[in-house]
Length: 275
Image 1 (cartoon, rainbow, N blue to C red):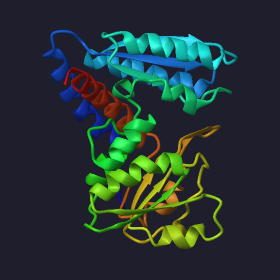
Image 2 (image 1 turned 45 degrees about the vertical axis):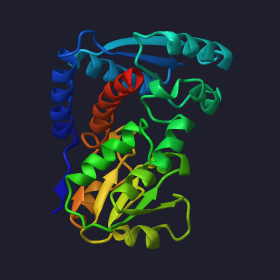
Image 3 (image 1 turned 90 degrees about the vertical axis):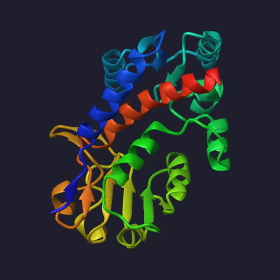
């Protein structure tokens, strides 16, 4: 049976360290979240981030807008937040209902982009310069570090290129070569079976079955879809667990780690703003 990579326990340990660091600061860091529309999943994710901030002593503020709000209004608010020294991190909860996410995110000061999606942060990450990396990518890397894997491992990321970009860079720093494959690719199963590390972020419950996984592989399931049977990942867990060497559960795997690394990024952003 596979080693279960318990993101919940690992995240709790990280959050305790963050809490200690925040307590030692003269003023608490601040996170501002822009939430657009009424999507239940987005509201749930923001509530989890708010709770996590409150537990470690990070000041949290939320700016809520109707789904029909103009991009210009969102950008104006971001510019206000950019100018505020008490706001160290700005996060736009994605996906946006209809607004152009690239344009909105590009308005964020790169030093306050705690989600790590700003093009300047991606460019700096690629160039090996100081940058804020994607919180979900950092969380995935931490989980892979908990699993037995060899230097020089081959990774396959089943996702969009945008999601995979920061992850590929971070994996390369660990001497892990990553190939990105479209979930609709005809040879998907052949590609995933070659992976020592398989990362899946699609939002398609049960997409990856046992026959698509290399025996002993590290399987990281980023997908979370709310179904009548509860939250489901992109990996058919009962089918894949006996074959994999290590696997993340859904829930309790990547999700808690993403929130924990967001807190890490808020402190990193504060440090970068003061340097």
